[in-house]
Length: 331
Image (cartoon, rainbow, N blue to C red; front, side):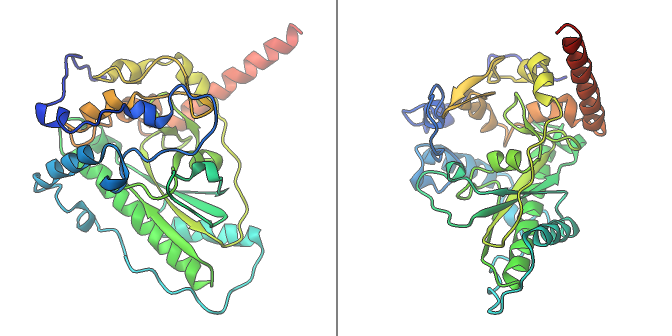
């Protein structure tokens, strides 16, 4: 596990472009009431308090020849112009449409597919989404390349490679849905679209929310990226997953100890009406911005090691079952 001294301070150039408000306040830390998320990063700079910081961050990317213009590299992001919506609408049951959507996505670069009914609380403030459904796509990362973070450019290149693949998969799926006669809009990272993708990914069965602020999947651990399609195509929702990852995170301290800026706390916090694991935005991004994206916490997560996630999930579920039996025996 990598270890870093925690004397890091951001460069004067970075410090000069931070806004006068904490990102944690924007995210709603300490708030007990539910509300929509406020855009904080990966949005048009004019719309966010951290716009100057985001502009500075992207300017640093552009000074790296291997990273500049990432949307045109690493396989590209697919057809940008959306296909027209067919005039004649195809008809089928929601169950069959859901199966067809998953089959198409998995055959066109996605590694994971899940469906959720779109909750307005997932939509960022200042945006509107009228589509009733969201299809979440996951694309797995090459773990050895990701694990070169934080000082090797192979890690951000791998991240951008998979974000581009996710964008291609989302655009291809949206165009396929439009060819059936239904509206569909693709959304691919890193720039955020109108929807915070982690909550619908959790609702669609992608996994459980980890202490490091990312989803833990039963197959890929946290070594994957998200994309999505919002659509009016009638679908059926998937169920959330539960394989005792939350139990594991409660006891595990690996990502907490590996974080070079101590951004990952040991306890859950209230965030916009939900008690959850939370990564301190100000601490995390100050380091993230100097290293072209960090990713240490995802790389060191025990679930992310190749082939480890299914085994840990089975172990944790067995442990939970044993505890349940013992508890019944003492009832």
